[in-house]
Amino acid sequence: MMVDGGGLMDQRKGIMKIRHVNNKVRYVKRPIKKKNNRSSYRERKDPKVLQKLFDSCREVFKGPETVPSDSDVNKLCSILDEMKPKHVGLSKNMQFFKSKSVAKGTPSVSYTPIYQCDEFSLCIFFLAANAVIPLHNHPGMTVFSKLLLGDLHIKSYDWVDSMPPPESQPRLAKLKVDSVLKAPCKTSVLYPTTGGNIHEFRAVTPCAVLDVLGPPYSKDDRDCSYYKELQHSALSDGESSRVNEGGSDYLRWLKEIELPQNSHMERIDYWGPQIVD
Ligand SMILES: [Fe+2]
Image (tube, rainbow, N blue to C red):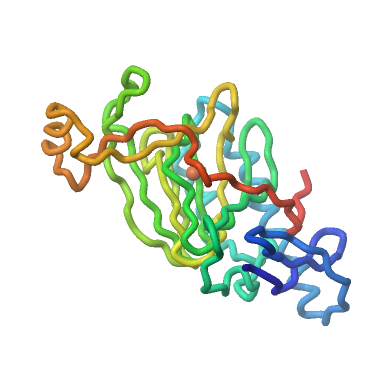
C-alpha cells in the first residue's frame, strides 16, 4: 500500500513525493516543475519555519542532565504548535495519508531523521493505519511530539517510585495520558520524570509525528527500553493490592521486555526543507 501524492521541495529544487511500496515509505525524486509565483513564495518561506525550530532547539537544549525551563518549553511549543506538514515537506494529499486499507502483515513504522547532535534530535515517524510504536521510555529526556497528520492514540505513564526495582522486576507506573489526538493539534511534551515519559503510539489512521528529543537517545547512556503492561492475574497479591490502593484505572505494573518482534522501523531519507546548521 501507500503511494504517490503531493510534491515536496528540497533545497536543490527537486520535487519529491513519498511512495509506499511493499509496505515501505519512500521519498521519491520527481522531475522539476515550474511553479507560479505564489507557490514559489510559499516554498521559499516554508524552510524558515523548520529553521526557526532548529535555531530555537540550539538555544533551548543544553545537553544531558538538563531540562529546558518553562519559558523555553513554551518557546518550542509555540513554534511546533504552528508547524504544518508542508514545513517538513509533507501533505495530507499524499496517498500514504489517504489510504484506508490495511496492508498485509504488520502495519509499517518508518522514521526520517532530520537532524541530530549531542544536545537534541529532530525526527519524523510515519505510522501506517493500525501501526504501533510499543511502550518505551525516554531516559533523562524532554520530548516534544507534534502530530502533523492523522489520528493517533497515545497512552503514557510515569513511574510511581523514583528508584528502579531490581532487574527484571515489574515497576509500578501511573497512567498519564490515554487519548486520541487528531491533527492539527497542540504539541505534547514529556519530561524525564513527568508528563508521561513512557509512552505508546498507536495509529488510528496513517500518521506523521515530528519528535524533538533533548538529549537524543544514546546507546551508552540513554538507551531505549520497552515495556509491557501486566494484567492483574500476572501479579502477586502484594503487587495487586498496591495497584488497587491507587485505583486500578490509573496504576499499572510495567515489565521491561526485549524489543517486540515485528517492531522494526525502517529508516528513510529526509527530503523536506533543509536546515542550515
Ligand atoms: Fe517516544
